[in-house]
Length: 76
Image 1 (cartoon, rainbow, N blue to C red):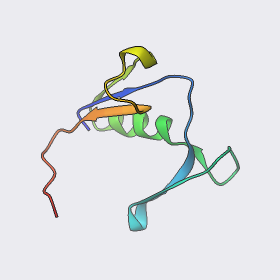
Image 2 (cartoon, rainbow, N blue to C red):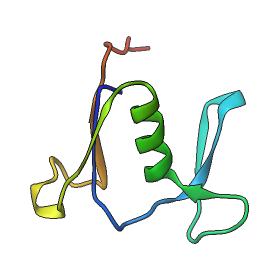
Image 3 (tube, rainbow, N blue to C red):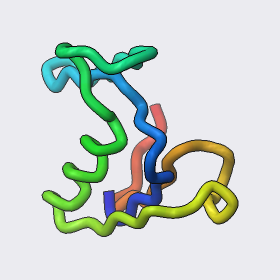
Image 4 (cartoon, one colour):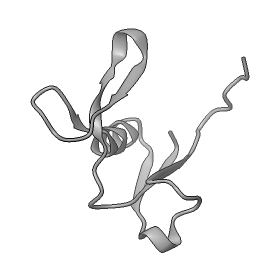
């Protein structure tokens, strides 16, 4: 990810499984999951990307996060 925009203070609980590249969403925090927005922000920063906290009314689109990819993604 080159640039990540996210809404602060609105966690999305779940877990990411690296081995099969799957994300699982949970309804609340537990010992088995984490805030996926924090994970996305951390991974973006670790790969030299930028992260911006954006208020809901300024967020592009309707979601809790939005990103600009560094490389094109081929369509299946």
